[in-house]
Length: 156
Image 1 (cartoon, helix red, strand yellow):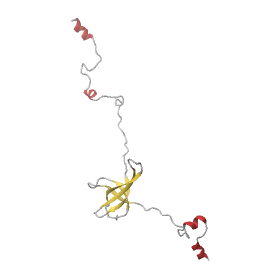
Image 2 (image 1 turned 120 degrees about the horizontal axis):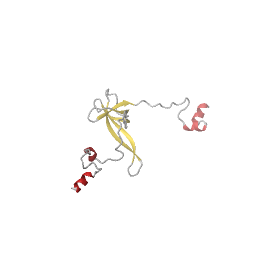
Image 3 (image 1 turned 90 degrees about the vertical axis):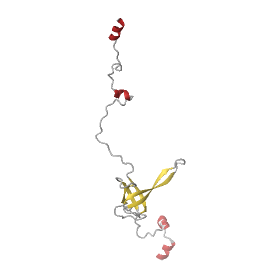
Image 4 (image 1 turned 120 degrees about the vertical axis):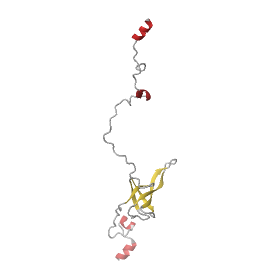
């Protein structure tokens, strides 16, 4: 009797004996990082990786679809030199306005079909340098300031 009375007076600090531990604590190991209360995020910015690309139209025979070839530079895995990599994308062209050879910009959009998830947009034309008056494209005449023989004959 003295043994049972001494055992009943003995208190154990572990909750496992009495079954008071929740199963959720036992199923996963916990770390100090996971004990922090998680706050719900109020604002998550959308992640848009590579939202637009530029390429050249290589095929425009399908209705409302153009095939665009995009060229990018990537390092070679062994030699670490930049190599051109080409990939063809199918893009949506609702008005059939693009012809082969046109430069277009591909904008990411919702999937339109199994292979089309880009929208073809025309690229604004680049500003070209305007030639000054009297400049015929001769390199030597403007560099040294001395007129060429052909220009001297015209002046004489």
